Image (cartoon, rainbow, N blue to C red; front, side, top):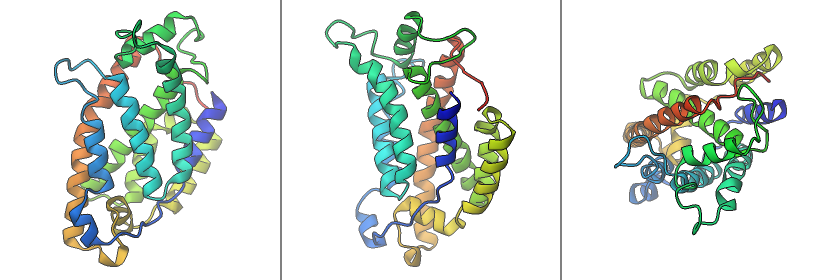
Amino acid sequence: MKSIYIIFTMTLLFTIAAPVHSFQRVQQTKTPMSSLAHSFEPVLSTKDKYHLDAAELLAACWKFSAVLRKIGQSTLAIDFESNIRKAEALYNSLAPSNNKKRRQSLASLLRLEQESGIHGPNAQLQDYSAACGFLWIRRYLEFHVDMYSAILASRDPKEAALDAYRKQIEPFHGWALRKVFTSKLSTSMPSRDTFLAALGNFKSQDFGEEEEQIILNDIGKLVSIWRPIVIRWRTTYKELDLEDTRRA
């Protein structure tokens, strides 16, 4: 999985390009973070707190990729989409008429793939597997949950990103990648206002206290929706012994 780890982590180093929509227009529409929160809301079942709906999750991930592109993170979106396709390949391979239950939830999909004998011992996932794709999608979301939570607590984006990296990504890196990634991340993160303006789709010159409150509220909602999803996601991997912790 070394090549997958390197590609994934290096794409996180790209800074966010500020979009060009006016504040007046954003007032009349949803911010990217608000739209994203709406997309992920149906993933965690309201009837069964242990059920992550596979179809809703995949659809939300594609919308997340679209948001990444919208806010200027096209390179990162390409890598994210490669992981979605790995996960989606298994889902699409199952005919709906004969496999409704098997493709209904994240857990059932992962269990089906596991039972095929595709993986190695001790949670050594195949690079092309759905489990590998879902694993890196989740780690990416966990990185953002931690980073956004710190920003909501008034942390500087650079400090927030570095702390999130150390917790969610660094444990899976060897010494060389840790050094490169930490160095690049330390110099690539924009200022707080620039970062929030980009996430809210505001022009930098239009960004003030009111705009900041709008995007912080939307980020807060997104984090509150993401958090129980990734917690359940991580638990599912542990229960199925699919948490591949090998270092790149």
